[in-house]
Image (cartoon, rainbow, N blue to C red; front, side, top):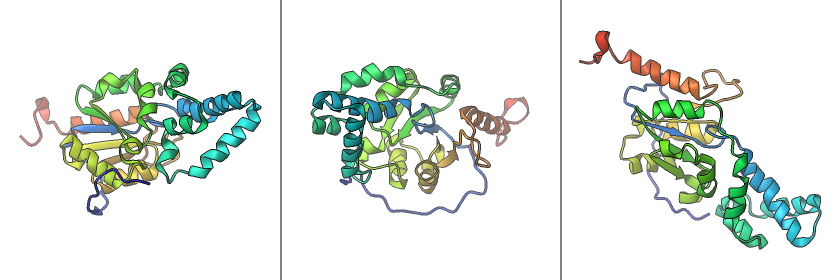
Length: 243
């Protein structure tokens, strides 16, 4: 896989004994599984592509799906093309993916608490999306809340790989902030929690199944933690505790 992102020297930071939100200026969100469900992307990859492929070749739905999924596996997630919907449409001779993705935008599902939480946090923090989902998917997925974000960053579209420590270091540089000023929340333990932590961000693990001790059950929990941190940093009368 081509590496289009610059390399940074890896520095392993000691684990934080406690999360500190005091210097937070940026709140970063993963997309799928955090802001939106996987319904839209699954519909495109598992339903739309096989359906169009079968229609073009006169195959049954089962035959078309088997052939398409087998073709996916010839590339695999280790290569950049795996994530590129344009590549697959060209490979299968299906034309432009844009119109059909727009038609299927009705399958986009924001998690219920997302609009209100983002609206509240946007008045106090700079909000960004840091995702492994390609931009071609992020645009329709996030359209209804896009105005609340100061930036949308995709590791697969920009770097040709899933999120890692280098991606989060690069994110901090692009936002012109110290990594420690970024709180990142996502539902993938390795890509969101471990990678963001290794880069120096304050990482929070979102576990909507509520099976992980200390994890966030939903984004209302994130808002509550940030609100609690903000309240504890002020003294009587609203003055700064450090004043």
